[in-house]
Length: 266
Ligand SMILES: NC(=O)c1ccc[n+]([C@@H]2O[C@H](COP(=O)([O-])OP(=O)(O)OC[C@H]3O[C@@H](n4cnc5c(N)ncnc54)[C@H](O)[C@@H]3O)[C@@H](O)[C@H]2O)c1
Image (cartoon, rainbow, N blue to C red; front, side):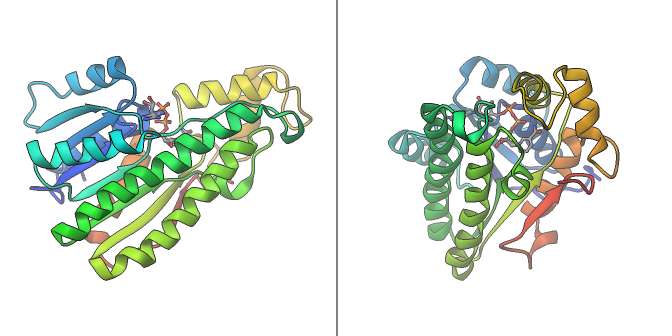
């Protein structure tokens, strides 16, 4: 499927581009012919991921940027356009899972941090990029929400609230930007693994001492998988395929959707 070249001649900005889902999506879009601008706050991880594209026939640029810093985001987006060219598509994906604690004990500072990265940061990127897309005549955007934003997993009040907000932001942005030929959709991954977020989630839920999960990570992993009708976690490539579809012209009549990628689970 990746031998399709649906993104030939198109530049895509991938935020959280040094992370697991960001990397997988960048890989898939590059395979489909896209030029890639990878953005992340973590310089070392960003270099490691970008270096993995070396020697391949892919135009790739790397951008260290904190999405919570509106001025830095504006500067980065204009630098990409100045030095590389117009951004046709955006995968708005940088995110932070937050602490694991029930709502009555959740650390307030961490709640603010989760909202700052996952909501305000996503808004900064969405605003800066969509303003350029309005000027250049259109584009496509995918925001990374989560099943947590509709199911409300225990011990994750900040993350769940932030991902619900991402869904709301997607719905309004789709309406605001449709007159400018910009489509805006969201994806909501469920349990995706293996990887940092999966391992961390399993460990932290086990440590949260709640009535919902066992106290050891291996049993928590089994409990989570047992809640998924397809009885497994999703692979990174299974996110990448859906994002590539939504950013391509194959999804030309789709905007304002939030697609679950969760094996039938919540
Ligand atoms: N992995 C899952 O199971 C899962 C499920 C649902 C949703 N998601 C969402 O998918 C997205 C990607 O997650 P992932 O699994 O690849 O995790 P990850 O931790 O591997 O990637 C997240 C990336 O975002 C970057 N980032 C964090 N704060 C930033 C900031 N302020 N500015 C710029 N970059 C920043 C991190 O450095 C990291 O590289 C996140 O939005 C996450 O909430 C993941």
